[in-house]
Length: 70
Image (cartoon, rainbow, N blue to C red; front, top):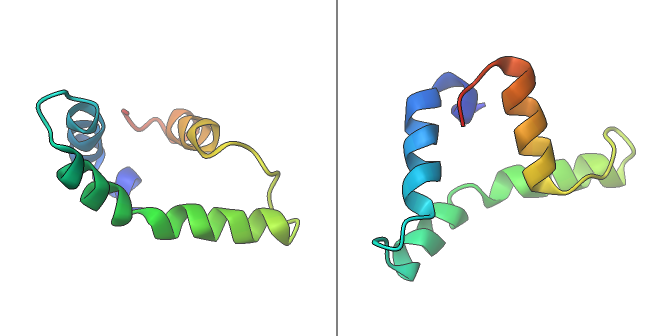
């Protein structure tokens, strides 16, 4: 996963995505670049491969288990 391979970049995106200094257009583009991950997880949940949990919770669990900073 990109976020695991690039923990500093992921931390930067997380920090500045929530910044009031970043316009909505930039936030939407950043979000759009990672939509495929949510779609992949939703498909796996629908197929019964993983438990259907909210994506923010899944992200927090994965980052915690792998030791990545977020």
